[in-house]
Length: 355
Image (tube, rainbow, N blue to C red; front, top):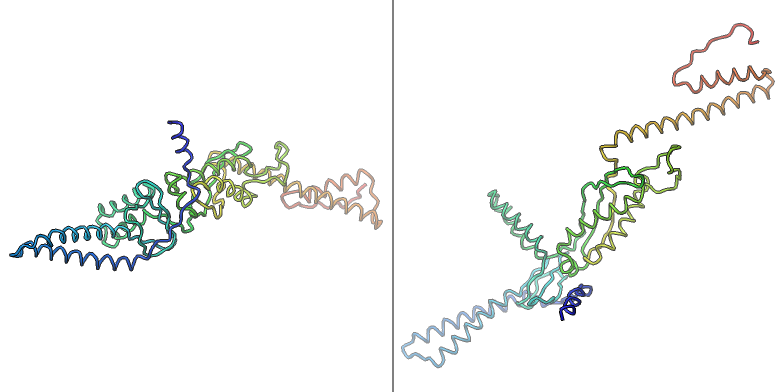
């Protein structure tokens, strides 16, 4: 019996939601107002019959009972009037059972005994805002805004929202600590799942975003360091710095799978900040600068050798001068010094014979 109950409870994941198409609220509001006024009038009439000198109790008592019951019914029915703003959803329950979800904006009438289901953390956050407004004795307009926030907290927003997580310190593929943060653009597409399957869907999204960033970022190096001591010589390898868009798409796919049960759709993920952690940032900057200097020197030497080779070939093909191997070596040495030097070379003229 206990295991059956546990299996039943574990199986309760709201994958199919019931979308309600309720009645228009304005006609019901008018009807309830008229009915309440008539009921109150009947109560007064019944009371008048009690104090009449003839005391018509046969008519007065039933009329009083009917009038009171009608008035109470009208008061209870006012609770069935629900307002849903554009891009909002209202999840309802009836005596602890899921009743349905309203997505259409407008003023509606539903079963007066239903109640809105909403994350308690969201309401607590709104109530804290209201209490803060009262404590700080803010203007009436600000207090009204905080009151509206409490009322809106019972509904689920289906607007496109932006979430920016804090910097996450992650070790990349090479073991270097890096700081990564992302911007997540998301929206609720299934309000029933968002309310019933997770405790608070915004906190759930935040936690899953942090987890996804850590899981994906550790699979790639921050950057390819092109030196002889590293194994990352493949220029086609994806890096956090050079392949941010591709890696962000991978994060989007993984995050979408994780938050699907919460009724959330991930529209886009963008890497907001990627940098080495402060403790190694200076050392890695020096390393990158050294690699850049070496690469530049390498290009200079390759260019200088090519120019010397071209000069020797030109002198030989035009028959300007015939140089033996020793003089060629001396000429190559002088040209390389001139071309590769970081400072301007001061020429020395030889007025004598080169032999």
